[in-house]
Length: 211
Image 1 (cartoon, rainbow, N blue to C red):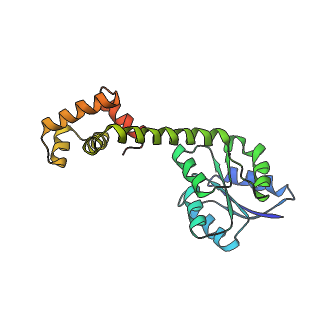
Image 2 (cartoon, rainbow, N blue to C red):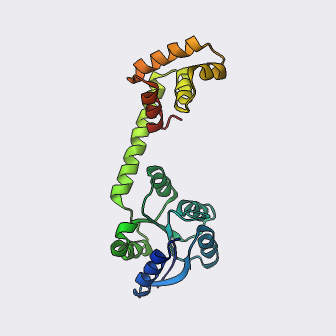
Image 3 (cartoon, rainbow, N blue to C red):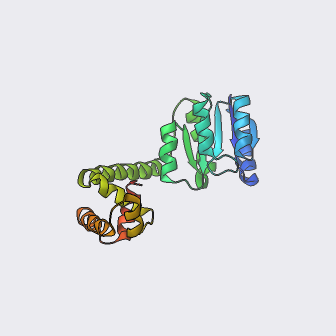
């Protein structure tokens, strides 16, 4: 029998998951937690085979707990339960070795199937969510490569400063150059990157992780 703990700050969700698992002889629920600190304490104490964690919880979220489990070399395998998760969080979770990822909208149908796979040593991730995040990461890396290839170090500095909201005079003061020189650099940057405004340049920098 696989020992499982569940953490979610919504009582209805927590109770529903507990009932779902209680009705399956393959699993034993060893703890129900309503926040991240409580969940991490229980994981450290009980070391269940699987921890089902809501990504959004007070005091410590699911990603932070996963990070702690990996850092402390706790053998518990983590399954993230989420209504929404950012692409950056998906990439970090995969990098940390998350064992499973289940969207809340499909939890009742998929959770037992995912837990069975994880208990057997497999990994079960929502492919659509992971693919979207990885695609974004690859685009960002390609953008960084392109920017580094076509821009000088000074031009990259100016791109980052523009993206943080600084105006030309502020950039000039920070880099100890004249405002006119900043304008010349920006003109060159716009031409190299194919953008026509500070807004487009800021979006370019954010989308390609140049900040």
